[in-house]
Length: 294
Image (cartoon, rainbow, N blue to C red; front, side, top):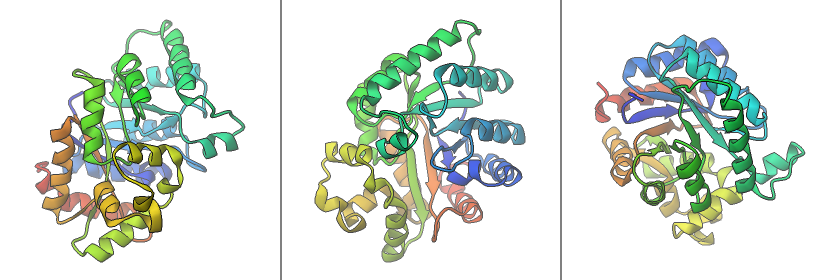
């Protein structure tokens, strides 16, 4: 896919009113970003429908699901959606799939006991359905954090879309994925040079993720401890997860992922008080020159 090295991940691309999300994606496209990403969580809109809306509202930018939960739709439905969007928008749709998290999955009435097995079976189902379609230009990525899922991403997908990870994870992920597989991590960012203010906003963003075992276990693998998770996150952890500072400092964080083996980094601009598309676009405008986009 010819999408450059930097895209944008933001929860409101998919969950704002359709016209608003479409205008924001079009503005990101104008600024030179190569992708926009929509997520799926409790109460969110369907990410595949949202992806279709954003694709129709733009001309060249890629749209990825980051991620579509395998528990929200069966494998045949996911394969059909991937085919439909890949056919309608060649080279512009990225199908990011994930096993989500135990509290969210169990609340839907599913059993999260063996997520790796569940993903493997889901990919089997997608591949069986794909036999009825011709090949499409729509990469399939897995929301892979730890070695088992990264190995599955290497063997059964086009690569990985890790979330809530520092650059050292990109290095480990590339080692497992090997060459030829896509590595497209999300990176939270904030154009804010005051350390106290930046870390306050970062901790507000991080609070929900520090309650989910998948993220904590991955961070433990990277050398972080319970002391780092306490009190909303140590300064060390906050600074690793959120790239904050001047536009040049934020761009340096993106380059750290790329230098560690990432192909494309989806930055997520954080805002005081929670997600805000207008503020996100303001930061994207400030960051574009530092990222070499214009």
